Image (tube, rainbow, N blue to C red; front, side, top):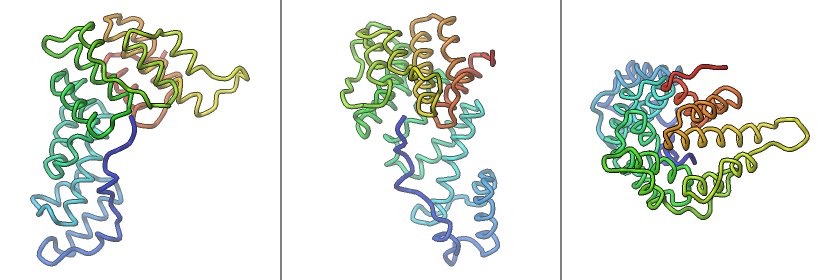
Length: 255
């Protein structure tokens, strides 16, 4: 999905190098920043409890919660990831609609109604993202009272996502497209050399084909495509790692 979160609360270490009087001792402030630079987010969170919302250290703590939540998700620790994202949003409530990462967690936690609502809120701040529409569909199918036909009818309309192969993915989930069209759009050039961008297109294509077949109840075809996304065309961005998380959660291994 498009990266929309944490831009507004990005952290510069230099701006936080000196603690304000009365917040953290110089020793604790140094320990916090050393831990942050070492990406020891457990330590950062431990050393920055209950700091005022207007504190520079709240930005440090919030960033640590977000990044630990992401890493816990990649490690398959879904409940723990949700707890970190909840704590982050408690610090920054205005970030709730931006937080599609928590929506992914809700899907894997089988909290489909919460996931559906999260993606509906995300739609208000990110209106042209096919991936948001698809994850909303996936949660809608499995939420109480949900089914495939209703989810197709309620598929969020997207008209301006130009990423390959997102138009074809959207058409597929809406019942207007085909698996073949997704693969053709993502397919590499005829030169036989797989570029990074072509690998990325194939990773996305097979991830969303795997999710499509999971929604259709076809576990075998879903596994086939998820293994391609996770192992044959792996990518190290968030959705590439999501394919790997999906494989792990479904007990799929490298061929």
